[in-house]
Every structure is written in structure tokens, then in C-alpha cells.
Length: 315
Image (tube, rainbow, N blue to C red):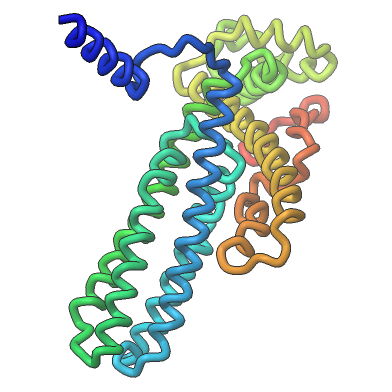
């Protein structure tokens, strides 16, 4: 009986030692957990780069076979793959995974989990094409599989781009600090007053609009707080404040990523393939809006001359 108990206790201890849900006596700090998570994402990004190189090499091998070059299939398929890999979304996602950025972002998680699998399937299909070509057998089925994989990969990257935009905005809006945009809110409220909109001051107070230029910022803020604007006007102000907040946060993100990209570029010289695209990640990231200097700030609300009326183009 004692032997049975000792054996069961031994099996229980072994089971607990391999059970990831059983608490361990040693405490693990949050820094260690984050380090493990970042290391795993870096490994994933490395596997993505390796798989991309393998697929590129397989496409080059396909171009050497006459049966796969019928109607320039291998050439055009290789070009389509290069377009996907060199796209802004793909390069940016690999860059973020390499540095462990935005790990809480759902699109980044999806990219790290799905893309290696898709690339592995594509590589296997390309190998199948090469084997069929070498055996001088029909390559129709194999090429159809490659075309289907490329189509799925293209659709996935389009979905990833949309998801990045949709997930980025709520996060940016959640980090917005209203007190940082108090001056712009006051300015927009005063602009509504300048446009002779309905407010609690009434028609009689419109002749004092030209005196607003002589008021201090605090006085303008106080007046704007007393305004009773319509829902459409309030919505217009909120949208402008939200756009400003997103703009400032995009500037800060690009500044951080450009700093990280310069460090990455200094350690990856001499590599080829997808890593060359990573060194230029900061360029696709910069858009027409965020191409301004990352160290700059949003322009102050323009000062209008005394008695002048603002047009919609000015704000």
C-alpha cells in the first residue's frame, strides 16, 4: 500500500512539474515575463524573414524550369510575392515584431501567428512545383496552389492594414488628454461664435465679436466654456480635437520607430532579402500627415486680424 502511495505521489509531482498552470515556488517578475514575450516575438520575426528568403529562393528556382515559365508564370508570381513582402504593412509588422512593439495590438498578434504558417505552406507548394517540373510531370495543380496561397496572403495583408487602422484609432483616442487641447477647443468654440452661430449670447452680442482678439487665452477659454453649441458644432469640435491627438501620437510613434530603425539598420548590414526592406521601414511609415519633423509640435491656432471673419479653409 505504501508503495502505491509513493508511486502516486511521484506521478503527481511529475505531473505538476510539467503542468504550466500549477504555480511554481519561485516568483517570476513582470520584467521576466515581458522579456520572454519579446524574445518569442523576435524569434517569430526571424522565422518570417527566413521563410521569406526561402520562398524567394524557390521562386528563383522556378524561373529556371521551362514548364514553370510558360506564360511567364514563375516570373509574375515571384513579382507578386515581392510586392506583398515589400508592402508597407508587411515591413512595418515585421519591424514591430522584431522590437516587440505593440504586442498588445490584435493585428500584430495575428500577424505573428498566421504569417509564418502561410509562408510555410507557400514554400511547400513551390517545392512541389519544382519537383513536378524536374520530374517532367504536370505542374497545373501545384501552380494553382501557389496562386491560391498568394491570393490568400494578399487578402490577409489588406485585412491587416484595415485592422491596424481600426485598432490604432481607439487606442490613440483612449490615451488622449483633454487638458492638452484646451486652447484648441477654446479657439474652435470662438470660431463658432465668429461664424454667427446660435449661442446663449444671442444676436445682441454679435457686435462684440471683433473684440475677441484683444482677450487673453484664459478669457477666451472662459468664454468658450460658457458657449452652448449645437450637437453638430460640438461634434465638429470633438472631431478636430481627436484628429489633433492622433496626429501628435503618430508623430511620437514615428520618432520612436525611426530611432529603433536606425539601431536595427546598424546591426543588419550585409544581410539580403527581406532585411533590406526593414532598413527602409521608416519611409513607408511616414505619411503625408506624419512626414513633418517628429520633434515638431502641432501649430498653434491662427490669430485673426481684428474684425476679420474666418472661412472654413482657415480652420
